[in-house]
Length: 318
Image (tube, rainbow, N blue to C red):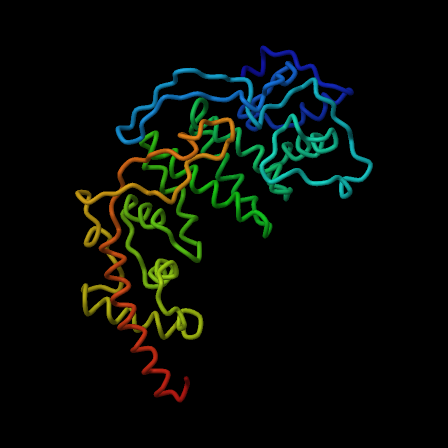
């Protein structure tokens, strides 16, 4: 929405609250001087799309209403004690926030790097998802990365998963595989899903022994030595890899072929509840099939596990 052309009609003389929100944040918000429609829960974005052939066609688009839309006429109240204001639900809608919660949310938008309850963070995120589809893709992508960097509280793990799924899906939809370089943060995760492998594959980086452990964490295997003797496990794993592949890491192109592909069933697309179900759970492009890699890693894990066990016995450990 054009910030210059809309005359803001903020309640209770709270215009200052809005004006202190940085322009780069405002530029990614959805807002209106209208009141929420009575049937708002049934208002959303309607799209016709197919991710298998990369085509997205907008059939019908409502640009005013979604969970993140800020309705200026709704009341806002400065809390007497912010600590006593009940938190919003995990997946809130702006128009359903209490006047005090609206104040907290708008105040936080002045600096989104500050800690905040996950519900407020999700609310901003929903609008950024919408921007990825119908607005400023690059600005929204970078803002979501910034939003993720500020999500450091224990309860923020839900939005961290949601952000990764959304960015991965959006890059597939827009054929922006180049942006996977900016998603290397996911390699810090303790457990790796197929998505981690795909991003490694697309940015053409090898998988190191400590990262192989992260892949194996999701397999039904004996993981005893991952925590009990990680250094010994990695040492033995490196030796096995050198023996079998010629180097102490995995080159994904040795195991993943562009000719063998499958659909990533476990990835949710988007989380904005105003999106149609088919977009929140879309059929995605066929992706490189990592099954051969997983089979190989499980096999060498069995060998590695026995070698670690033998070394610990020789040291007098059980």
